[in-house]
Image 1: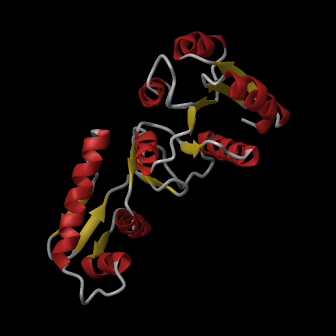
Image 2 (image 1 turned 60 degrees about the vertical axis):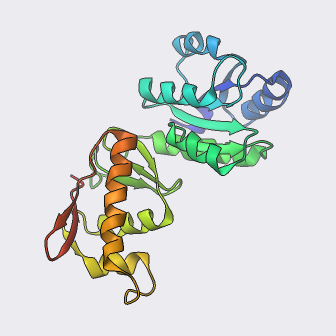
Length: 231
C-alpha cells in the first residue's frame, strides 16, 4: 500500500475535531478518509470500503473504545488500529496496546506526528519481503516494546523482559547460557541472584500465555541455560 491510497476509517464523536480538523488535514496529506461518529456505523462503513487503518477514539458515546479495538483485532488481523484519545495515563496506554492497537496517541496531537504514526503502522502492515523472516514466528516489535505471537497476539513487555528476549532472539533455537542472559539484564552479574532469572522467565511464560493463549516456547536446558524455539 502507498501513502496516496491509504484508506482510513476515523471514529470520533467530536464532530468539530473529526469533520473540521482531522478529516480535511489528513486528506491534504493524501489519505482517503471515511469519518463516522458512532460505533454503530462501523460495520456498514467497513463493508462499504474496508479501511487499511482505523483511527479510533476511546471515549465514544455508544461503545467502549477498548472493546472496539479488541473486536477489530479479532475480526481483521490485517487492519491497523491507531488510538487517538484524550486519555494520557500510562495504564490506558498499556491497555490500549494490549487490546490490539498498533499505536496510541494522546490529544492534542500535532498533525505531523499523527501522519508519521499512520505511515509507520502502514509499513508494518506490508507483507515482509525478507525471506529470512518466516511468517508465524515469535518476534519483537521494535517500536512499541511488544512481543508478537505467531497468531498475532501482542504482549506488553517490561524493560527487563525485552532485554531478556532480545538476547534469546540473537541466538534463536540455540541454548543461551545463564551468565549471558544475566549479563543482558543487569550491569552487575556478580550481585545478581541467579534465582531471579528463573523467576523472571516463569512470570514471563505465565504472562504470555494469559494474554495470548499461546505457550511461549522458552525452555530450560538443565545445567546450561535457556532455549527459545522461534520456528
